[in-house]
Length: 121
Length: 137
Image 1: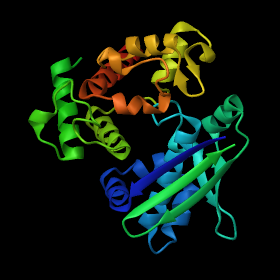
Image 2: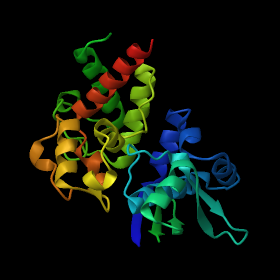
Image 3: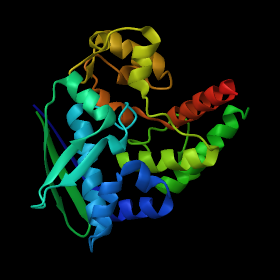
């Protein structure tokens, strides 16, 4: 079992989204974008998802230059609102190699920051 | 083919814009995290700016994959539980010659690679991608 955690500044994510046109599609999946865009505080939700992706990378021990695409890690929400990690592409492969069967994730955000905590097991 | 000095100038510009640091502080040997105060999000910002400036895509295949592919060796020879073995550390030093050798040791964690990044690391990445791009045509 391994853990990963990350904190993301909401304003930094907002700035990156406005500065780099393709940031959104390279980092977030269509489903994540649709979810965040529906929210009143959409940048807090984008930041929380970004923190979750970083946390997964830390938990599996691979940073963004080590073979995983951001969109290989998708944060989905159950009807109850509870977040889940939906592994895609290279992450699925990596989980097999690292003998990881699932992730647990917890997210929290406020006006300034979003944090995520991930357990890989 | 643009020369290394020109690549450095453009990389420096991207870093100055992303981090809001003084141009004279962005030396080739400057560590992005320790000397220039970058965080992991800043690396992404810098990478996106560099990609736009040079019209390239920085490969996501990764330094770690390069080490494995180049040698045709098994992952467990170089990496155990996310940390480099003595052989892995040696290969990483060869792959990142711009980094002070003492900073890479057996037990160094693969997810800490971004903390090693210097300005020259980005220059080398751009140089490699441009060379591959030129070779492909």
